[in-house]
Image (cartoon, rainbow, N blue to C red):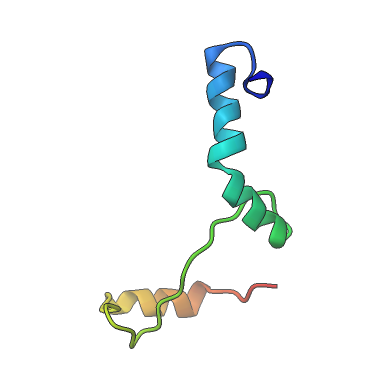
Amino acid sequence: MPLLGEDDATADRNYIKEFVLRRSRETGRQHGVEYAEAFHYVAANASGANRDPRVDGYIRRHAVPLK
């Protein structure tokens, strides 16, 4: 595939950029950045949401609304 380049190192790098990071690139484009990760929020009272209470404090201090 011409997309991957002529040598192993270039092929590895181009494969990752084109196929592995595709979803991160598409998510980033939606938010005006080059790459982004999507996360699924699980409400505190949801089944299986037993988590360390320090997590809620961290979220309150650091979370910012999306655009």
